Length: 114
Image (cartoon, rainbow, N blue to C red; front, top):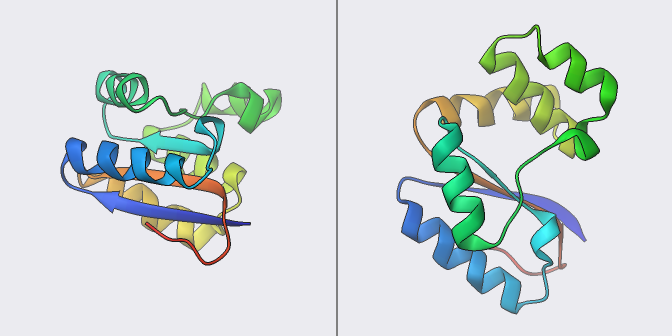
């Protein structure tokens, strides 16, 4: 099982792919959605029955630190907490800031991709 991600320009494409990977056995709790807008993220999480990163993934210290950090730094911290390197986290943060939907899957079955 691996950590994987995919970027989307269209919300409906992200939802379609999320539904597909769930049919392959990926649990909703292992699917995380990131966007540049809290309402958009919440709407997609609800429509796709997926997850957004929270304190259980980041831990209390990071959550407190994020209160005093820029939006960009918070996103980078969240991607790193999921297991991405600093360089990967910075790349994904730029994708989110470019108005893309980033879907991250933890425990992606071997040999399966978006």
